[in-house]
Image (cartoon, rainbow, N blue to C red; front, side):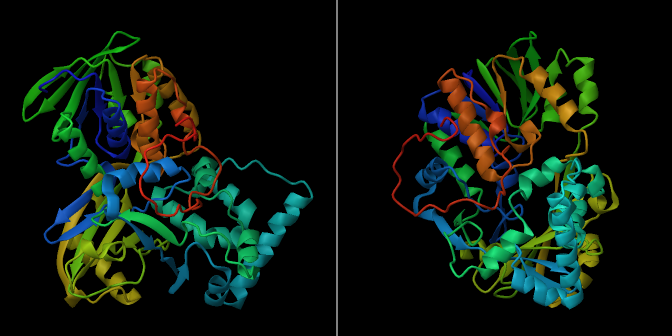
Length: 488
């Protein structure tokens, strides 16, 4: 590095880049270290020939208006509104998502609909008479709230496909984060209501017109224009400390090692890999705790097609375990600028563990495994395929195994002992959250440094709320203001 930054940020994903942007606005001297060739992390946008694609569907919604203004300041008119249409495919039928009662009952058929209502009524009766079992695992959580038939139909199968674990082994924390607030009763009430209610992010969201990575590309340009350093293809190798503070960080880039002596270190890289960098190493208890945590990986197949549109959806879920892919996105349905005129693309996601068969497949093997399903479902004709690209990504989803909280708290307790260290984002805090939460974590981390005040980063995305909810703010010209929302 050409300068010794006051703040060194490891990881150029949503959390790291938003932290850097907020620090830049406060005229703090900083540098960002990113291992990849471009910033954005899991929210980067890839340029593949004439096509652009995100790594899976990324839409923006938040309860925090400051975040909308933060991004609108960066993107201006490239920050567009997109209608949302999403479905899931089960037993040969497409169902709208979030579930619409009328659509679901018509597709299910009379017998399945009766079983859904019977099981739901049975669980509600148990609640009414005071039979409240402890919902420690995901399966018991969703069964107690929706009934067994609907839980298996819409939640358990897909959850097991994502994590590669039985739902009895997955913590109920996952359900509390992702689906709290949903119920069959709320679906019935919505179906019977004559009023549409307030507009919500279930039907409209914001999106950068050249892909979600445009947010972080714009931040990078702002940083570099202001004289700050963003080092891509750079990797942290050693983090030296004295037990109470970080003293030095060695960074490797292009075969050379540089040493930084930051006053503050902000980490947004995977927490388990971050622990391996410390010199001296973490205590034995911390290293043993790390052995109980793990991430789920993904493989992606990006198909370019000689057709105007493949599907009407932004994305589709596939809970059926006999179908190899778990989700498909068509990026042109987010923004027409993501594909050339007269062509489109499909982005297929496969949930895997590193090292297993699907992780090792080349693109032809993966395509041949997927094509029969794609054609049978009616998503494409193989003669429409122009090209295929294979991508792999480690450390995608932190796995909420039963009992994960205790080892995670041991690790966080040790990291919290460093007075000049902050750790943020989905990988950095081992928390499955959305893009807006990672941005908010980055902003709060920056505020903690700027104001020399401790903000509770752990509180972000921790409330028991359904993540799909949130008011969609009306478009208005950007006015930079700090609002009272979680201390921002």
